[in-house]
Image: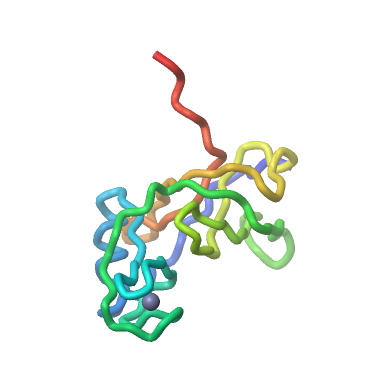
Length: 138
Ligand SMILES: [Zn+2]
């Protein structure tokens, strides 16, 4: 099945913990929180590291690449069908996200994906994922 229309997100709820995430997304960058005490990334953004409890967390850019950990087709009770997925980023964190693919039958667990951005009703960039297309060799 192919999606016939594009999903438009409601505006994301912004708070002090995720403000940088949304500001950077607006510039087309996916940012993750990194803990310098245990050298691990985490998502969603929060002031204390969920792995070790340290407050030594900073923002770092993600390469925006990962793989589908799990996904489902949202078909019933929605105006526009969409794919909901857990994407495991190469940095080690897992994000719940929308997956935008022209060919839904080609989507599979382990599929390589890359971040893209979709505008909300007020034009805030919201990260979504699309099938990874490696850059062509020169
Ligand atoms: Zn930590």
